[in-house]
Length: 160
Image 1 (tube, rainbow, N blue to C red):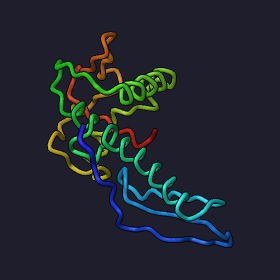
Image 2: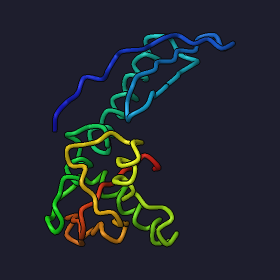
Image 3: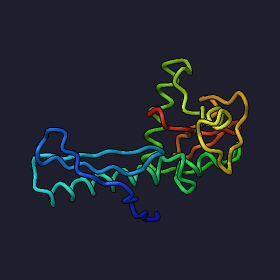
């Protein structure tokens, strides 16, 4: 698995009436992620925030729609019927998402990625091919851990 250097584009101290509050902001997961710590010395706060951003980076590498090399992007690039093995983190999220889709009769559906790309809400990706009426039932989670598409689709986990 590749190691990314977390972006350090924006960090600042935000006091907001709280002495000793340290807050850093960085672009991750297609948005700005803000992490703050109070009540400890600055070097301990910075170290804790760095560990938190490392965890966010791991999520980005695994579940990030905006990361062309993420496990999610590899899933989205599978052709119909082509099985792929995904990381345990992604499989766990997909298991929960499919359970929610079944419980809500598809109202909650992470296979909405193609619609969001077509609407311009998500960036067009190289694999931006998705059947017009694809839904959660087209994402097959197999017992052996493999994942496959019945029809071409795109998963977006922005709602989780």
